[in-house]
Image (cartoon, rainbow, N blue to C red; front, top):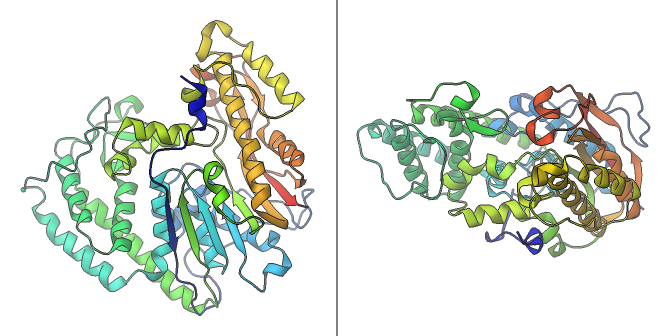
Length: 481
């Protein structure tokens, strides 16, 4: 595998999605999912702030709009609200600030920022979460009347899905799985649903339906998230032989419709709603098209160094929603992903570290000497992965320095890692890389401790001396000086 491929940009077409009307008249968010402060009175060595509460994305499961798409990683809407309140500079309070999320995921940062009256810019290389993010940003302007009519049309059409032969041309032929992804009674219903969605003329509503389908499709399939995507039998669960796909999809759509109705009432009391933009692109490859020194606040959570494979775990949505149609396009996403994946770099020649960091160099040397006999599956392969990850961290800091305004703040939620029995404190190394790029590190408060079992710390691909370290998450808080 040639090393030159690691920096290759994906071959999917770059798309920019500008969403959200500029203004609404109103005041404060209340009602379902009322926002809570994420900062306590106690301090944690951080200028301007107190201790950060647990930022877990799981809070979003009960919040309107945020609950539309489950996501394995990230932080809660309440966390974003608290960070915006605490770290936007005073000069931005009387104008529209720009909030950046370079790894936007399903749009938690973007949605909360525009709801608070700021403009938001997000990059997301994976087109499925990018769809979810842009759909949330369009929720402010969706016609409830048109949405109701479309939901009613689908409900009527679905009555015949069990007895009418579905179109065969929209099943993704390149999507391969070890067992059938959908059971024989379910796949025809899925094809009917996708055919219906493809005929919706209003793009915002069509994307809402596509987002809903992407959210429920694994639940009616023979696969499951545990948290990685795998077969139900492999997780000790039975196959899903039959399900009423239309009923499941309609239930999700009605939940989304209720959230949109709530949102559109809420924004009538907010003086200003910002604009949100989602760029379907790798941040490291595409940030140079944005204006330098334009960002007031950056709130993000990059992929952790835990080899969670976002591309492969969203393969069903990517193929069935027609974002990709070939393994080559899938590989383009994999090689463009921040930090790469172990599978993409393990067989390469020894990757050089692109930055000077004596402590990290020592960690990499020790890691390469671990289980050398296992080759790519031992220390050498995992050392390549760690090297690729921190090389991307270095590039990330360089891009962030260019985009941030003077005195702008960045809050990066990231976790440590245990690889081949070695604990790697990603937060501390990331802070040191930021310092090398001229940022002032205001603090690295630990915001969540997680107890984990052997499935994480001692799995077959992470073998080594047993390490009883706790996996945790920290907020690396930077300021451009």
